[in-house]
Image 1 (cartoon, rainbow, N blue to C red):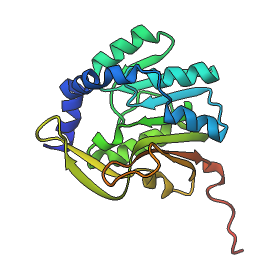
Image 2: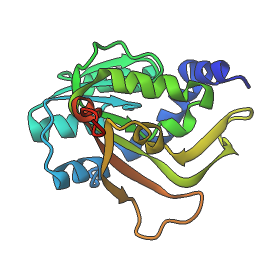
Image 3: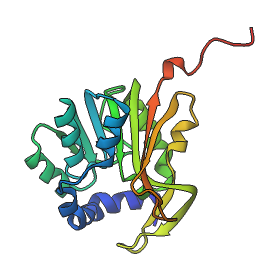
Image 4: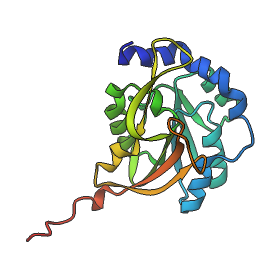
Length: 216
């Protein structure tokens, strides 16, 4: 399956199938690792975007906690419809991470919500560029996903011909001097190989990334 066709599969059917399998869990009252870590590091966002937001449950919690404006983008039309009904104060759109319908620097918090492992590698750099574009300088990026020490792929168990891709996704951003790691929290204390899930919080400071020449 080509990279573009995998994107289409999630927009056309598998996004809705994923939401149907997981929606009861998403509505649960359990503690959210992204919100918990956000509170730990003392960041108070005012404008939040979650990429891969499902029905917007996480964005809604964050906005309630910080009185922020909430936005989300999600390939499942069913999830977006549910979210628009449940959380009318949120602005939720159908779409994918490689093409964000938002303005440059619009958000001071951007979250990847457990979705990058389902993005084909040929779109990774587009997704990185788009997230960086919409994140304001001085803002914070959260990546909630698998955190594996080496890149590799698995067969996607729910649909033939689709793959999942695992790596340490924060490395894409940390290659830039504009980003630094603020905090990493794992979902379980001692994660097993192929099941290491956690959240990385990164700060963006482009204005200080390239100081004056230190050699003159």
